[in-house]
Length: 340
Image 1 (cartoon, rainbow, N blue to C red):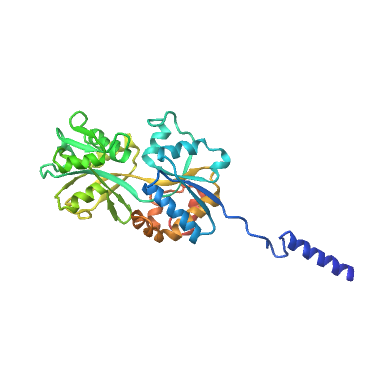
Image 2: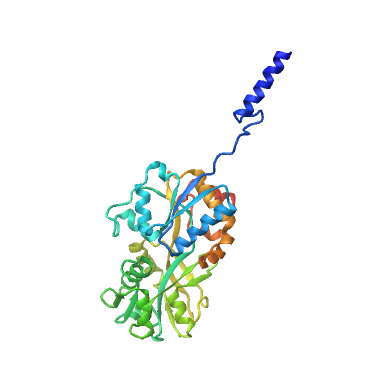
């Protein structure tokens, strides 16, 4: 009897030592999954939001070790993700842009070869939509810009340069019929204020669910001085499809009249989706906890950046499907009742 009792004591001590226990695992909890987040260059909204996510993870979400990394930009992010080792891909996510990814998988400039790796989405911050504004009341549609001077961003910019070009050329059929000037937004604004151009690129970051928006600084400055302007949609449904064919912008938005000061008619425009993504190799638990952290703390983001005010639980999953989501992200959204 004493021998049996001693054996039981030894068994209990051994079980405790190895963290087994008689009722299941009782050892030290496993370390939370790690995630390296490739944001963008210093001072950009992507960078500031990345700082916010890291701070939130440290203060409010201990189930994820989140490390924000500054990068040269979104082109670098895609190229970097493609060159990571399989082990590095398991704990790396990036800030991406759908128009840029569309170019990457086709090997179009600025990419020298096709991106062949599969990218899985996690969730989305606010989207960018661009269109045009003019002071001329006789310019009522984008087609009325024929023969006119139009200032946009730089050639190296997608949302403010190449996409407005597509609106004019492919959407409205004005290639060779409009005087398009790639001068950068700062110079475009100066030219617009001095009446040196007839129209310029305008836009906003939007929540595509609520239609809440934050105007770009150029438009905001024009409206703040009380200047009457007219907004021009990139086009009708047919034009939007032609634009999608050359930009990859598959989402659209219709901004109802009155959402912007002086806006008299709906603005129908393509939507440029920024999103967070990873490789297929990204760990299930890392993807799950990142999205769960975003869902449970989205209301705190307004304290870090103006774009945080646009983000809601529902907007995080905009444009996402079971097929394009990482399985861990899908699980988090499904648990929250945000996706079927």
